[in-house]
Length: 459
Ligand code: PXG
Image (tube, rainbow, N blue to C red):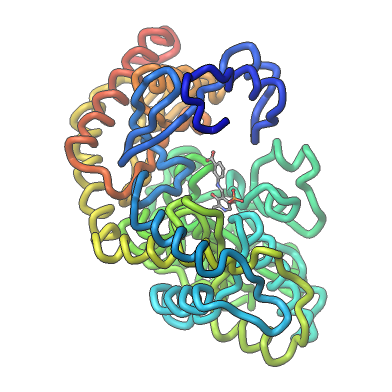
């Protein structure tokens, strides 16, 4: 069936009949037609209608090495032939999982030397949160249970991940476990008011300290935060924010979990977002670009100070997945890390990010609807605004972003809209000529959107 030699299979009809999609209003999906992606090469997706679309999102922020990499296919094939599956329970291990654990210990910040594997970012987050609570239980402080996260934070779709994140729609739909709270995000454009970004970074960090005081440090297990908030709209904290969070967590004896699911493996122009922002995490969660999305894999990296307690004092931690340390996924991750290191993709993300933003500024700074162009490395956002002088949002948040997103797709570019921010996160392999295509299509889409909503924008 998958070969579909004559092109006779009605993928769209069958999808509507049998497939439920993530984060989707199916009634409105079925009013139109789902897009069928059939293959991809480099930074381009091909759909069943013959369109070639530049993937400005690297899938879902994950395809760091680009599509169609034979090295990754070969790594998977070789491992499939040798040992397609075995587990890591019951005193067993496999070479790919050991090699990957060691490699991650080498490339993560000093002290993070122990890896626990899972399959998705959500599972990694779930694991880290349970570990944080078990850590405090083991140290005789079982009351330290509360997890502090941030509004617009995204930590996955399991019940714990949804509860830790700050997406209110997810809280409403069962993602609201007890012992989770959220504080203000370091979103200067939205909340900074008259403060400078540096002042606001301190102010936003102190919200965490105030919350700890209010709850009592004896009740707080951990603070979890993405180095920069990806799915929340690429909210990039001012540089004063994370050093202050480091201090607050240390002084109050709160574990610091850096959720690197989007930032990890070069996206910010450093290997990890923690490197970029100077975060000193006790645990790191990672997924997505660990395999460039070619196979599902995630990990929690633990600092020695946490691992020592769990290893030497906790006894058994009753937690793990059938596919924890799947050998094929680990083999692909190793080959993917080879690509990232051999091709200098981390440094490339940094350099290309600078070039991309120069091009975006040149094309869009003058535009009355473009309030801010932000980014680090190859991740960023173009904030569409109703009044760029006063940083005013549109009346109905998200409508203009959605209009623009549809124009982007029609113009052959995948860009996500988060509220009215157009976010970008292309493969780290993107070339300068491809950046020109991205910028031209984005600018054209913003112009078409503007033509439609002009009367809502202050000049
Ligand atoms: N943490 C972070 C920071 C993430 O971005 C997860 C955890 C969960 O990972 P899994 O593998 O369970 O999905 C994520 C995932 C979007 C979008 O539309 C973002 C994610 C996933 C799906 C869609 O921006 N991030």
